Each structure stands twice: as C-alpha cells, then as structure tokens.
Length: 348
Image: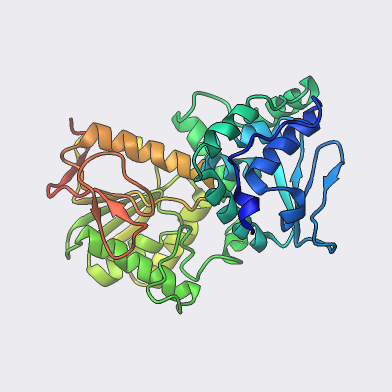
C-alpha cells in the first residue's frame, strides 16, 4: 500500500445521503480507496466496488444487509469483526487467506492519530436493518432460549456447536483434536507437533507434579487431560457439555490405557458439590475464529476466579487475564494466573 492509502488526516465526505454511499465512506476509511484495495466489496443492494488492478481480485467482501457494517463496527474491534463473519453479516468470496493481509492493513490505519475517532463518527451514521431483516435475525436467535449463561442455555449452545459430529472436526484438527491455538516454537512444526508443544507448555506453566488433581473446564475431546495424565502423572478430570466430545475422549482414554488417572465427564462446572477440591484448574481459551465460544469461556473463567480467589490456581491460555498475578512465558500469547494453594470449587 502507498502512503496515500493510509492517509486519514483528511475528512471523507459522503457523495450522497444514501445508505450505500454512507457504507462506502466507512469502507474507504478502513480499506482505503477502491483503486488501492486488493479486494472488491459487494453491498447488500448488489452494487460492487471493484479494485483498480484491472484484473479479478483474490476475494470479494460481501455485506449481506444494510445493518451488517454497523454491527460489525460497533465497537470497531477485531472480535466484533470476527463475530460479523460468524453470524453471516459479512462473507468472503474467493481466497480467504488474502483477508489476513487486509486485516493487517486495517490495524495500521486504525493506529494512526484520529483514525478511530473519525471512523466512529461515520459508523454512527450507518443504516440499521429494515424491519424484515430485524425480524429474520430475531427468528434466528430463538434457537437459544433462557437467561444468558444459564446452565440450560449454555448446554444448548455447546451442543449445537460440537454435536454436529466428531468426524467433521477430525477433518481439520490435529490428531489429538485440540480445538485451540497451537504453539510453533521454531515455525517449522506441523500442526500435530505444534499442538503437542502447546500442551507441554501449558503443563509446564501449571507446574504439574505427579499425583496432583487437575481439572480442565471445557476440555473438548480430552487432548490436554490425556497428555497431562500420560506425561506428567496427574489425576486429570476433563468436563464438557457435549456428549459427543465426551464419548470420543473416553474412548481414546481407554485406548491409551489411562483409565486409572484420567476421565472426561459431561458436566457443568457449576454442578460440582461445594468443597470439591483440585490442585490445578485449566480453562483453555478458544481461537478467535470461534468468538461466541471464546466469550463463553471468558465468562466461565471470570466467574470461577471471582468466586474462588485466592484459593484457585487458574490457568487460561491464549488470552489476556483479567485479575490476579500475571506471569508470561516463552510464548507472548500466553498468560496465566497461579496461586500456590489447592483449588476448592465452591469455597468462599
């Protein structure tokens, strides 16, 4: 990109008062003028901003409704943008890997003085969805009923995501089926080696010792508890709300001969009897590509930390922690809370 493409010192005035033109102003603020972009943009009315390269762009960013851009940028954070993609507000047609380069360019633009304030000023002028689109979105949200983060709603949310089938996730996860960010110490590792390196990093940061009681909240397919039980000799319990995950995890535990010190249960972390004790508790985070699940993980960890501190040695990988002593290690993306006392679930 040229210097002109990241010059946000000038105001960009809308060419008209139409909703699409208002969206075009915002897209120019975050992506630059169409002639300097590597992607095309298609709006909800079918109009398209092409690139100036004179050839087919590697991908097209699609805004599916009038209110899509406003939701994506309210507030203008990386998480909101990912959520917009997950919700289907925006889509990427073409080579999705090129979108990463665009994301880096957006970050550079928003880091310039005054850029974020100018963007917010134009975002508030973006249109909302029309009544028909709002009605459709309400219908889509009716699948999850009940109070947010209630046990029933959380269970329904997790099962709708993970119970689509273990075979589906096995297509693109590593052989341990670890559904979180991997750790590439040298950059030469394949996905299996990188996930094993990540699991070992977590165990070392937790300072696991043989015989300790480890609880993994939201354990997925049991990759961490199996690794910790086999390599570090801990008594590991993983809990998940997905029956399909638990079935496969326990099958692998049996196949690896770890039944005596490793198991996975279908259980909500709030269902433990008061006074249940563990030496270490893990709540490993979800990658950004699954923001809804990551938000739920954050809520779980924060609730546990608020209720159990200072008794709770809590580790949460790949996420900035929110309270307590922060310790960072070899990977800059990892931080954790550690308290040198046994964790007692339910203890005040």
